[in-house]
Image 1: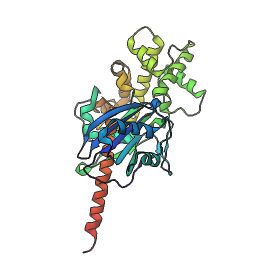
Image 2: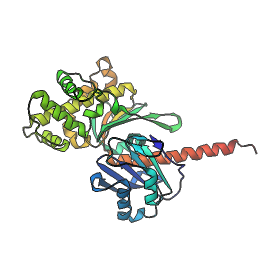
Image 3: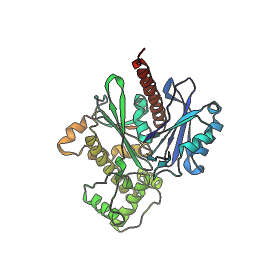
Image 4: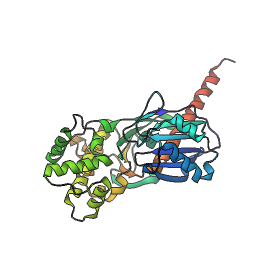
Length: 348
């Protein structure tokens, strides 16, 4: 998903926002230094009636934003023909045209959130939180950016000649969830009682963590011990004796490792796998000692290939904003280059 007017360059900064199902992250970006954010803020979606209200609150709080007249939104979902966003994971409708009018902007572009993250390649090294597997130096090749939040997003950054980069946005979170162990199969059967198609993000997301907890409780014939995804993660990480919470999060990590390993092979991600999303940084210690890496590598003879892929956890929030700005500015450069080529081709 990517929708934009013809962006233009100039000295004026632009507003960039990463819009998730739980938080909206906003910053100002200098067109000459898109890897550096100015006046970064994070807002809880539940505190606002819509995205326009979030961005208006930012503009009021940040005087430097008062003169900004262009921006870019990174969101999950698909762009409809009418310019709105189709997403099951956003808390309110997102219609860029209406938001642009409310803010008084001249331009407001739209890009998929993980597509934006993939465009933040130059800034990624500064935002690595944890190295999980593979060499520190990545070989040249496609990079998979994937992670769970309110849903599960994934995009692939593909390097080209002369430093050019292409990004493939995907709907990998809607692919079918697969099971390997007897326990995973039993949990999947619980999900199949309610629906015919069980997508990956049905289990591997914030809401999915709670679904796993409830399904695992039913499989074991016991009552759930926690009522929210945050409570499950906290109880599992605290080591306070909540076996069901611990096993739920372990199951989450194992399924995620298997799914990400499959995606790395499917997309040929020899340049690396970067884990993002809103959940994993919160459980980084648990993730590091869980079955995530063993399941990521458990692909038969392809284990040797996966061992050569750098697997890292990156900080999502600021990277999403930086990536949205980088995508927007790259579109502007591409447009300028195209226009220049047309001018040069005209007969004199």
